[in-house]
Amino acid sequence: MAILTLVTTVCWVVFDVYRAFTTKPAPPVGQDILSPIDPNLDLNALNRLQTKVQLNDEEIGDTEVTSPDNAVVVEEAQETIEAEETELTDEELLLEEDLDTLNESTDSGEVNESQ
Image (cartoon, rainbow, N blue to C red; front, side):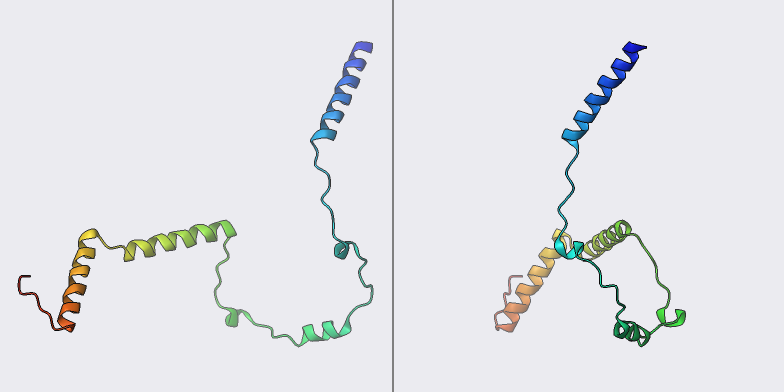
């Protein structure tokens, strides 16, 4: 029984020493958070709350609640779709450049007959 008690005590001490070295200290808290709260109610602030506009369900309309992670995924998907819609192939880009060149030469009065 004494050996079991000795092993338990040694393990306890080892784990406590390990925990003391691996735990992070508490972060410092600013004085503005530690300062006491005023126990008196601000009646002016409460009266201003009563005058705020309240919207009913019809005025709010249908809203879709998403998590922040889901919103990022949806936003990235929309950007990808928009990029794919506006992406031009190399051939289309060459055609656009040729058209721009033709328009510029027509505007300046130069027409290349070899094209």
